[in-house]
Length: 616
Image (cartoon, rainbow, N blue to C red; front, top):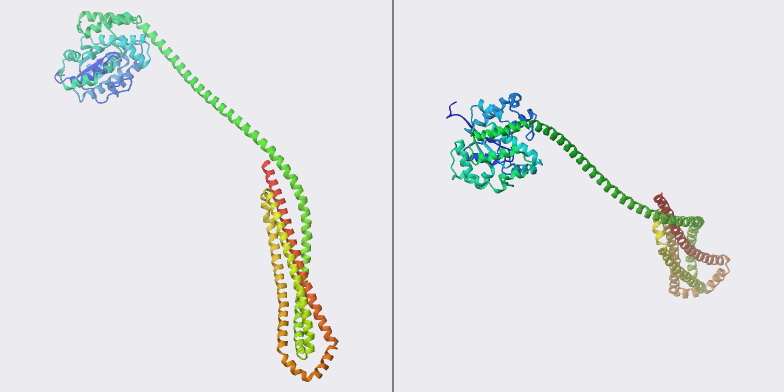
């Protein structure tokens, strides 16, 4: 391949946490293409990015796994293993690099794993006929040990051996190649000087005044990239650092400061001595690797056990908290049960008292029921008597009509004689006296009814006072009122019937007063007929004869006497009706009181049943 068209690749080698990312980012200033599939930055690990290709990184992990290694295994990777065990991966690596180089004349690749796998990758570079340049990053092993202890919790001794293998493999496998060693601390102190060295050794054009370099130096290379710094001679103070590592570090410092040419015999001799000592340590490192794997497994077991203990401890705390909450709930429930027991004892006392009251109410109810039965029988008898009285009233009404006819006949007789008029006047006077007396008696009875009404109202007020005192029982027994209201409706119907009968009696009274008005009209008419009587005096003799004959007529006397007796009977029957009405009012009041008492007893029984249901 013509050198003018030959692709270039710049490989950054070195130990993890040695500044390989910062150096790789700076290669862009020299025109090196790093590809488009870069590993993203991780906060707290590599905040400004790793600047290594994801695909190449993944392939390197597969290569190490195929060799039985990991990125931090202690035993060295033998070059012969790379040639024998990684043959099947060579084609993949060639295709991968060819794809990366397709759009770039100069491609940069960085992965600290390549330092251990360099024999494999150099075969790939040769197959692709690439012009290869190497940048070997160097950093004080004490700084690297501190960084890996913080990130991965590695022991410093392990980091020292890993540092030794990465740095020694980088130097051994790049003998005679175009290479440059860069000290990370020197890069941060004077990036212009270090990139001038890199550009000169690798034959790149470099403008230290360009905006690209100024942006890299000002924005990327910050003091935060270096958390610790040690002097080169500080490695002599740590007894855990093996002697070959001290010698190798001194050689790298000399190469990075250009005090010693990279391909000088002195440099190559020092590298060979370190490589010989490192090869002698291979069995020890293999044993350390096995021990480390065992320790790792034990640590994993301990970690799993610690996680299990933590989970069990958490479960125990949760259980204890639940037990505590349940104990509190049980204590609270015990208090509630005690309160309920106390309430139940009180309720049982109330129930016993209610039962005693109920028994007493039952006895009273039985007595009242018998009284109600007697009263009902009496009401039936009274009703029958009222029917009989109604019949008699109708008969009296018929008799009264006949008497009115007889009075009309008597009026005709009165017109026939003055003597008969005087006799009738006398009879009318007697009738008025009787009517007056009857009116007096009626007023007396009405006054008595009024007095009895007042007494009844007073009794009702007293009974209402007692009802207020028994308001609790009345509220408790209110549900049984519906059963009694129907009976009260019947009583109300009976009252309406009695009222109708009273109206009929009043109508009879009005008929009697109408008769009185007719008699008064008769008297007026008798006065108006005085002239006719004067005319009748002419036939006095005949009139006297007729009068004597009339006076001696026993049938007339019987008729008048019968009229008087009928009137007296009528008045007495009216009085009896009034007495019956008052008796019925008293019976209705007694029945109302009885019904109220029965309602109270029924409500007490109902409350007792509900209370017994609640207790059960």
